[in-house]
Image 1 (cartoon, rainbow, N blue to C red):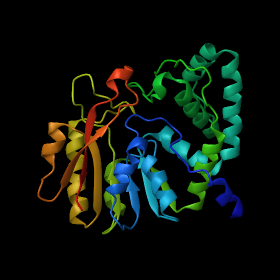
Image 2: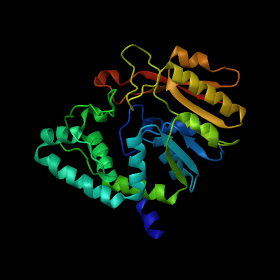
Image 3: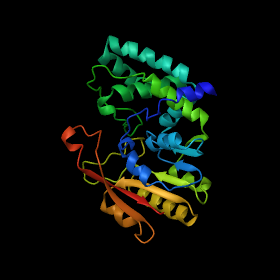
Length: 286
């Protein structure tokens, strides 16, 4: 046990760069968390910034996290269960990348490994070396982001991976691959559910839902809203992030839901000048 606590002396941070990641918003999200809650649920896990913050601040907090992206869920469980093998595989990627970055990157992008270790190290390697660190797949579920322009990317990032592994091992965290609607089966009165879904587009060019080969469309937003209402009626505490769009703002009744507008930066925009000056909504029922 002593070894685990020594390893998490370094605060664990998201190990993937994910579209819509919440690392920069942790202070605001923390201010909006309820003072007390039961199990923490996060059905659109992504990079897990809020999860790692909660686990760091609340020792042994019970959590149930999930995502529909099978590769991402596998990455979380592999980091938790097989960290030494994973780091060894990433170091091999790093050595090969340094020899011929372009040829090696595209060979890995085209590969389809079968072992859990190789699948996980492939995702992490591509995330560290692809353009803008963007995770995106096409309609066939194939990763399609080009090589990024990096001089010396931190491919292994061993210290953080070991911190993540240690805190997932030492905490009561259930990791599942499932649709967000499944949270209704498990969440009870007093539990906290945080939804951070693919955002509704605020313009025709701002529609990014490529985390899986199934797009998150307006019908899914309606389904998500129904789930939020049902969780509210069960006495659950619900926190939701989404874009500052008319559709989202109008779909939640203002009598029982508090809607706050917050300013954010968009780290994955290919044009750095367009990464600032954006807003999104933070909606809660408590």
